[in-house]
Length: 322
Image 1 (cartoon, rainbow, N blue to C red):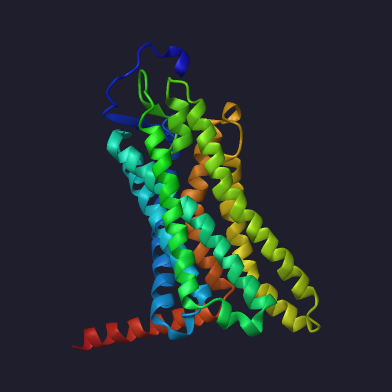
Image 2 (cartoon, rainbow, N blue to C red):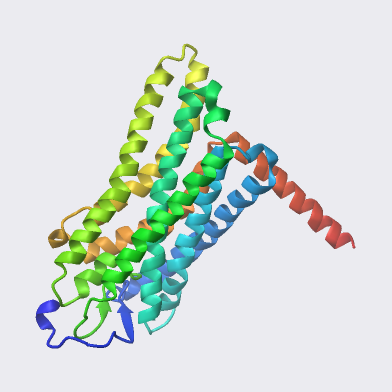
């Protein structure tokens, strides 16, 4: 792309073209259907988790405070990217404005870094619950949980601000074509015709910090959790302890593995073709699966959902009778 550019735009471009799967027209309709269904499921699932964690008094423990924020993050994730993807796939125009593109990757990176820290906080909560059960209420008190959530949101915002400030200064040359489904910082850096060494280095350092440090804390916590679980004498106790952690481990794997592949590889080996489908996975598939992962393996959440649905059903019946 850079080799065919002839001039540097002094003013920012008016819009960008998001290719998506334009080179495979036969794939647009089935992908549109998959995205639409996934988006609806993600919205319903995450809204349900947020509601039950707020309305059910039995789900006011730290674990569900973090889970509520995780669901809100996933809700924002999908809303930031999927509607634009659906509009582009459903029309011949594949454009997004420069301001909309900037807003999209700014919010996307903010949410991504925030989720990294929220997942680490959830691992800390599981560590205290299993390794220090008698001191759980003393250690994981509500003010601490609120501080951890605040740190997650503020640090994610700080990282996003740095990325936006550096990215908006990049000049773009020729046709502004992004081989992606939505705007992301690595794709924007790849598109620029200037020297992007500073952007590449800053992105690598910040992402390594926000991805690898929380991941190390998660693995460290689960190392102690595994040791504590193996010391439990009864198989029922071990199974219960494993059940409280398995959902979180699956969510961590779904989130971190694509993120590590996407952001922690050398920029020279970054493939836009592979990257756009990986970004599609963690922008829609992971947020869609997370609510089901937690509800299918969590009796408290399933019970709270049943109570919520029965309450809604009663209200609907009363409304129809009136």
